[in-house]
Amino acid sequence: MATDVQVQTGTEVHHEEDNSLWSWITTVDHKRIGKLYLVSAFLFFLFGGIEALLVRAQLTVPNAGFLSAQTYNELFTMHATTMIFLGVMPLSAAFFNFLIPLQIGARDVVFPRLNAFSYWVFLFGAIFIQLPFVLNLVPGLFDAPVVPDGGWFGYANQTSAKFSVGLSIDFWMIGLQIIGLASLAASFNFITTILNLRAPGMSLFRVPVFTWMAMVVNFLLAMSLPMITIGLVLLMFDRNYGTNFYSPERGGDPLLWQHLFWLFGHPEVYILILPAMGIVSEVLPTVSKKPLFGAPFVIFSGILIGFIGFGVWSHHMFTVGLGPVADAAFSITTMIIAVPTAVKIFNWLATMWGGRIVFNTAALFSISFVGLFTIGGLSGVMHASPPVDLQHQDSYFVVAHFHYVLFGGAIFGLFSGIYFYWPKMFGVMLDERMGKASWLIMFIGMNLTFFPMHFLGAQGMPRRYYTYDPGLNWELWNLVATIGAFILALGVLITTIAMIRGLLGQGEKAPADPWDGATLEWSLPTPVPHFNFQTVPTVHSDRPFWDEKHEGGPPVSQGKINEDPHKHVEMPPPSFWPIIAAFCVGMTITGFMLGGGGGEFNGGNFLNQVIFQGVFAIALLVSLLMWIKEDPTPR
Image (cartoon, rainbow, N blue to C red; front, side):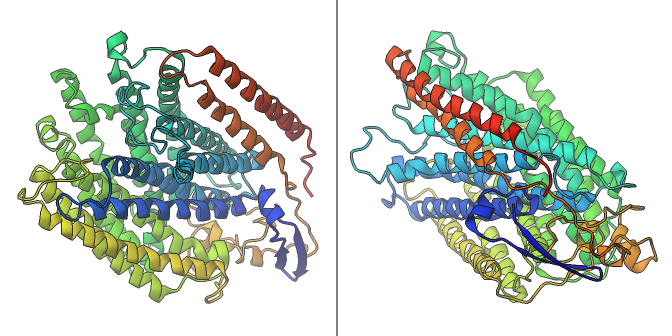
């Protein structure tokens, strides 16, 4: 955690943070952890984008030889895995970390050291799952492919030791388990924080919509991650210890994996999109100078999406032969879940209707989110019909659908959040000219890339094929999609440059309230003091800062509260035990790779595994004991 040198003049607090590397390694400050998540996740997002460009380059023309079939399988597997687990999810976690305590009037999360632990576990898992790319550069190190190549969905039984020889699937399944542990730790922390640390007077329906969506997402994580964890553990036992959970020739059932995976995988869609919906629900009212239309309905619709999201997983399995009753049931639930989603869309439109909209970069990304996500949602409702789904299954129509949802939706929403909250996070404004140029180029590139995929899918082009023959009428739209992908990459590059300039402190110094915001985070000075609130405010409405500024409401801004200027707020001290414990946890889980027996139990390998894991388990125990023993007294 940063060490503050505080100089207080009147009611203003000036502080200089310790920006040494050690201070960042040992920080337990939620704001710094949010920044670490943001930078780390954005780097992985860029890496996933490069993988996508390589895939598109291969498909530009028929029978291209740019990539081999094996490399293509590796790239589309790692593109999806990287974007979902290392890009969008931790980008959302960056905003959770930074904003939740500020929006609810808290000085930090409930468990600051657990918060730091979750970040370091995530980073360990993210590096581990990308490590095969580095190992692949060493010639002769492995006899079999080492980069994961079984798709982000890892369908059984192609992930079995029989059909996926080597360590490629092991890196994938172990890495996901490590990342899942990080998400579970964070979800418990955020849920507890929101329910227990709200400012006086902040009832649940005075909690900002973003924080509400964050709470729904973290409940989804806490309930869905155990599903995929079970599936991954069973896969690990099949590959390493000779069990037969997914092996049909020995009595197993490959469909068990599909059920376990999609019981996680479809709530995962809402885990990815709800944070963006929360950001849009903060941005659009602010730029429209109006309250969010029907805010309680927006909140209830988010809760309903969370509940119904656990009842739609088998619409991913209409082609496996579950039977007419199951198909009908999941078809109905898939149609029903469109209703609360539509409620949000109409509420956002009603919020903008008649508003004095300021078309800044954040607004442009949010407005685009509404349109692009609607396109993706409509094509999703189409696939609620099993006959339609049967025609489009594993075609590029489905690729178009989920990219409109996850890129046009989640990524555009998160980019809106980056431009909206960057001034509060880093104290400088991102360049608006660069931002608007980035938005326009990304919007054009996004539609050029993914809209033609609807045509390709309708014409029968299958997904996950590394090449195709000429004469199938796919050449034109593949060329257009590849051109669009590179245009899209240019737009992302412009935002990347703007962010780098912002990190270097280049740009206009940000005022405390650059957008005339309504919620508590905008009442704080910029940069936000280490302790957030010198005096925890009392809240009287769902827009407390707006009421203070424009409605004559009671003061919540720190600069207007008559406080002792010499008051010092104590905060939890920094700790290096979270990063030590995270490393030990990661290494202990990694030890399962040593038990590999090619689908059969191997006593020698198992002994090596036990010894390796025993050493790091003991180290983990010691680190946890020191963590508990460490003096948590605020300093």
